Image (cartoon, rainbow, N blue to C red):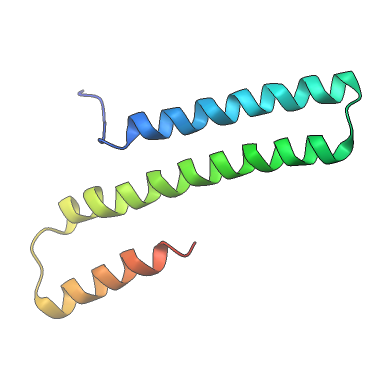
Amino acid sequence: MEPHRHETHPDIVKRLKRAEGHLKSVISMIEEGRPCLDIAQQLHAVEKAITNAKRTLIQDHLDHCLEHTVGALALDQRQQIDEFKTIARYL
């Protein structure tokens, strides 16, 4: 079976590696007894990196995999799929 890859996957990996670095930093900060505000800021960075990676992955899936699965559609059906893809960006 051939690996499932999209052109956004390298960007997603970069985001997750950034999150991994921030998370390691958070662990060290807690172990060192650093101030809670500093720790919270780093945790926010981890959260944001993971959220952005997830959002990119989901949007990419909708834009490519969903398109491939549903194929050619009538205009009214196409509009519903496009609206779904647009509203999913707000998740």
